[in-house]
Length: 376
Image (cartoon, rainbow, N blue to C red; front, side, top):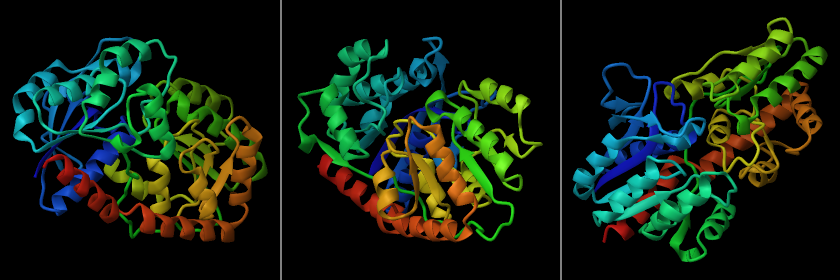
């Protein structure tokens, strides 16, 4: 089959985060199954020449521009992508749109559906009941139409499934299929024998991800554990200035650092250099980076409203802190930096969890079944 994926934005540093990494992983798995794949997206920061490949998959990129200042990814659009999609969508057997409330993927889903090609809408926890200024008009004009026109809707969790039915009460439970985020299994392994462990935040420096909370916890714990290193890795999505201001006041003599962003194909190897992974994000639908951290045997610390929190507790793959209690987060990190045996045990459990439930082979087989059903 010919499968066309659409995401909002591709940049050199992969700033879109999870949806882009998920799309790339799914495409690579589909290629192994013999499918022909292509990723279409808006593009920024590439200079004068746009690439034809990204992280090993073929791409068709178009300039993206911000039409709603201050709205982040939600305010982006790409007229070139939409014009191209009108012409070529019908050459695909399935169009797979990684859809958010933005002006790239919402109209892209509608354009694809208008051509009659079966369209799979994959929402990645990005569409739920919202009081944000843009949400209501977007939902009335495009979101509900795109959901209703989908041949299949993919959600990450049962909670997301319920959220989508709140956004559009006409959706039936049978319209929505749960598909976990899959990741390639890694041969890399974190070293938990380190005498100077590293605690890592690897995510976009964006408000919901709460990088400043990570820095404040690091500042507190660095006084207790001067041998521990605390690192932030990720692109600035609005919180970089606040992080730098905190570090200018106290970086624990260089033990707390923001190291900038990394290309997507280098993030897992970077994780393997650490000993603890921390994601203080609130209302994290799933946490692609959390799963990636588990693939290299890192114990993870997440908040209790993270979509993966129940599994992390059930499989003893890390610790869960209260989202409204910074002291709870500090206590969780503290317990791991001072207990190498616990780090090794939880890291091994997380790696087993990923192998059993989140391997790309399992996810790809389920997705292939979805494609074959809608393409009939």
